[in-house]
Length: 116
Length: 109
Image (cartoon, rainbow over all chains, first blue to last red; front, side, top):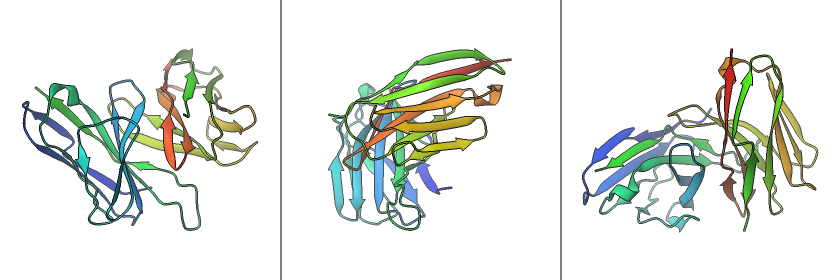
């Protein structure tokens, strides 16, 4: 069982505001990911990181940015929120090494964002 | 580009019945994962399948992988209400996961 945390769990905010979604994991996993999921739909990768100071954009274009200054922390920032950003944002982490090299991604509880 | 397709997308079944969810992927992949998601919740890892012919079982769920056919199945045996959820398969491609659309399973008493 992975320990991965996201805050806030729910956020309702007005258009134009800057927001940061927090994601932390305590397993020392090198790899971390951000996904966007609309209700009842599949997950789309928007950002990922394979280690400190390494970040890449995912397959779904996103106006958000991420940083990875510490192994355990992978925050996502929206400089100016818009109604089109309304969605659920899921953070995940994985570790390919060790005795169980399955690279399974473990997900946090998610942040449900509503932009008015 | 890797695409992952699940079939069916919605499944309503009676308790006690058996059924299979299919997951097809379009390009060679070295890992296939199954996840469960309850409404309004996050994803819970169920299985990871690493090689052709791999079979994993947990309770009433059994997953298998045929890499030659690029097909994974999730078989449900004698369904119970607690299995009601959305099930996602995901294929690994260049270190990233590509998810299927999800199959929403509704088990009726």
